Image 1: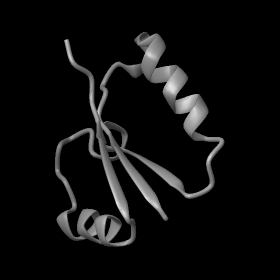
Image 2: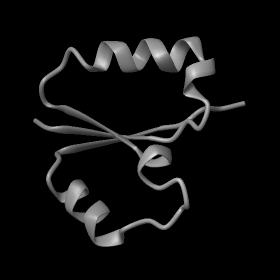
Image 3: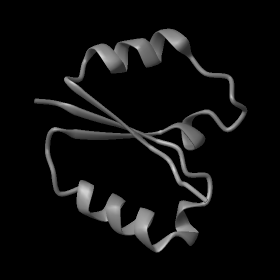
Length: 67
């Protein structure tokens, strides 16, 4: 199984929980973290690229902060 985490936390460096989660995720081989804020700072999303990422993975996780 391949996992894709669509990560959208613009200030994750300020979040103890988000930082800890990212550190632990790096220990897993079949998990890809896709930081949308880092890849698209101008919010111009490459739709075809994103569709391919979705198709290449079995499980999609949406990770974003709640305030």
